[in-house]
Length: 162
Image (cartoon, rainbow, N blue to C red; front, side, top):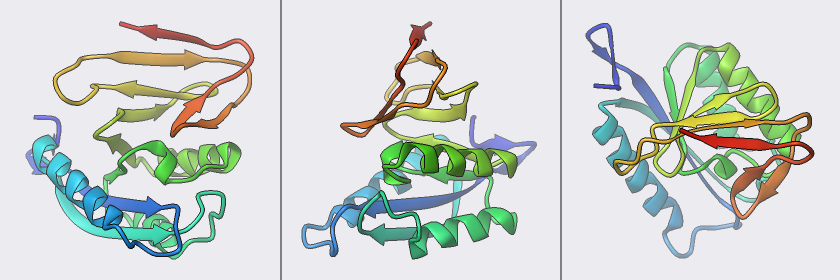
């Protein structure tokens, strides 16, 4: 099972964010439930949770700070997000955040996007949820920007689905 590492479950931290000043419609609760269900499905042990309300362009968020502190203190092996746009909407800052997590050996998983890896200039998604086995690799010279919740890579971009 994927969530096991040498006989122990991988420790997961969930992060939820909505782009609103307050959660009037229960969206954070919905994201949290989706991530907890996904963690169970993947065999992860959830050891912490953080959440934020507000713009994904602002990276000075309490919940995101908690995530990074937990990562730096070695409290988690895996970060779970509904999709990569929940981390942020500024491409350069999001890529830097992903690099920092990668340097700390934190794996990032999404129920919508599978496992997210940094590539040369983009990211690699594996093991798409819900039974699809897809490997996607985007190669390009420049970093793109988020569009409709997905990182779109510009200039010369090739995506291979295996």
